[in-house]
Image (cartoon, rainbow, N blue to C red):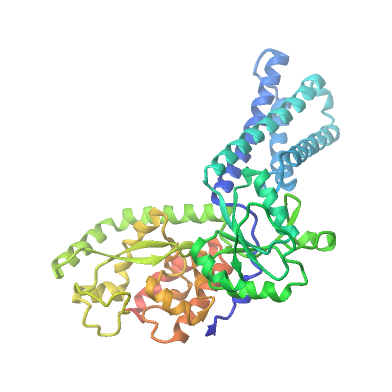
Length: 478
């Protein structure tokens, strides 16, 4: 089996525990903090002075407060994911951050010699009232998020490797804090098991890991093994290399504080992310906005052309305008991709999908034009609006091709760590069209993995701008 270059580096991908829902909540929380600070200030001013006509000192002081809070609050970690922290810890951090904001404001007022311009009673009341409302706001949002997660929305299905003390603690944390949204499916037994985890089913041993991943489709795999189990940890990473699933290490090394700065603490348990997608949380929201904005704009601009192409397909041959096929998307989940039909209606053997070749007799004359220009891909803009695809990403392959190549290329399925795209790094590098050899597919997948590792909005823009030039060359598309 070939190994795709660059895959070992994928293990070092970092991840905060942000899902797209938690990232949206994070944005809402930042906005609500500004509103709370401002509205409480207005309310206190109204109670103290009987009107809302703030003077220049109070107006400028309020603006400074908002700006300082926007710097101090993120630096104090107030907007990180709640999956790994209890409510009391967050409230303590909130009051420490809000006190820090007030200390900075007092220092600024002292430096500007404006301390006498403010009412001390109003300032004290504002400090206490704002902190109290910010606390209530977070308690309400946390309760809302927990209620949503207890209903199964934004929850994470976790497969545990090892019945150890670390595994026991992470299960206990998941049970006592349902708002964390962790659903432990069961555990895979290992030679390092130490305890029995009550209420968690043993799903088999390491020899059955691949089958259990297929059966239970976990969102995350948590390795709860001691540091001396390096060989077993490496074995698990190799067994999960073709699984587009986040892999985290819950090392059983309590007391080894010297390496805690490389971990995330989750309910007191140190957790290291070994493999995950780069496009999560806020990055995922940015990419989703990018995708849908561009897709909507292109559909509006190219609507008349797509109508003419659809008419050309209908007139040139009998059959439907659109060709639909099952493809693997994000996380290996299947979806139905749309293309303009470019071939004569025909049937294939069960479970077989034959790639188009040069001078393929199945391709219609109009279809040959569509395929060489890649205009047959335009309906995939609808897939982007549906959320199945991105504008830029690894190209979606037929399900049958994925089954075939995943058995021959180690790490092949890691390309499903992001949504598939209409165009991608592999396409602008010249790896379009038929992949009639294993080396060609390996080169394409290597580009896909590189894109996932180095994703940025700038890289997407570069690929989008380069794509028309590549299409004009009409290489490898038939």
